[in-house]
Length: 189
Image (tube, rainbow, N blue to C red):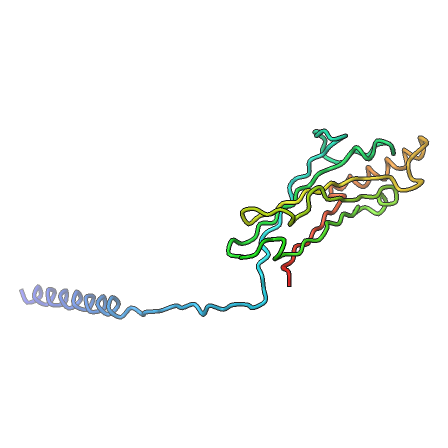
């Protein structure tokens, strides 16, 4: 019977120890507090996001299902073009209209392959300029991208055409884009 009493007392001591340990952990949890300092960077305006739509391709004003600007004879080349839309979405908390609060550059385009650039020139013109019309904290501009032959580079013989075709096929073989389109949006100072 004495052994049972010792076992019961030992069991009670263990339960009591666990209870005290549990109470210590429950009632002595650390407490933390966070606060924001509210830092403000003076003279900085969040520009927002600028996105370019996938280009749409046209021939003589009609949309085509082609995936690129077609290279054609010198007379018809002006009829082939792409239209790219640029959208600038700026933060709602900006109390300024895009035409007053931002500076938009005219896009620049560049033919990235030097060999093709010997034959062709790429150019861009505005249909509607970015920043000219704004609605719901967003402004959109449309731009027309065209290719033209450089002077005295239009193939006139079969040999000249085959030489140009080889350069063209080499340029597109690696799968890289051939025309870069760059536009800059900056906060007005």
